[in-house]
Image 1 (cartoon, rainbow, N blue to C red):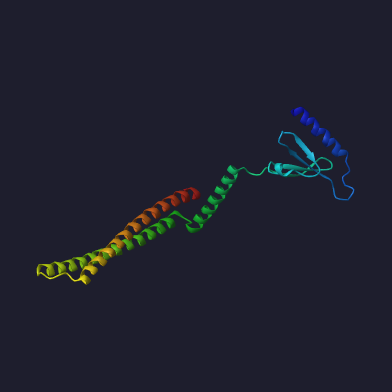
Image 2: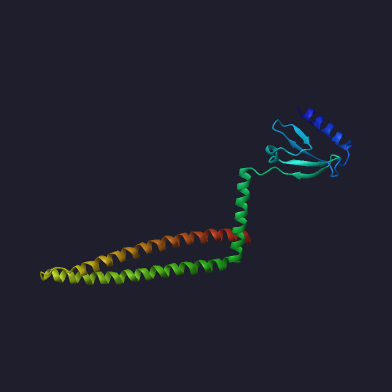
Length: 200
């Protein structure tokens, strides 16, 4: 089959060599060479059928010389790899722009973690304050009960409100801590990548 295909191509090229370089209308003649679904090399003046364009083809002049080569379209896998490589290159450029050195990245990490630690400290301080308010209100309620007096609804609502605030602040602290861990891990990944890019 290969010998037949090669012979057919040689015959076509010989015919091309004998063809005039210009068509009757004036523009130069070109031929399109592609491989069809049966593995046969085809030369066509009309162009490449849509179903074969993605497989790549060549454009030949009237003398049979290749004047243009259109490569095959990338496969889905190759396209994903190209996109991943492009995204990685963009991320690397941004990383190098943000942190020209490892020491600058380390300083940025320390500053960012310190900011979160500060927010956690403030939140813990608020918890201590609210705990004191809660203890004071509970003491008032206990005193009223010891004296046989009912606890006012307003006092109960204040205690309930403080409990809700304490729950909110506690949840915020958990989120701060989770964010701190994520940021620390991201900085670790960035540092490893930056060290590789800088050759350290």
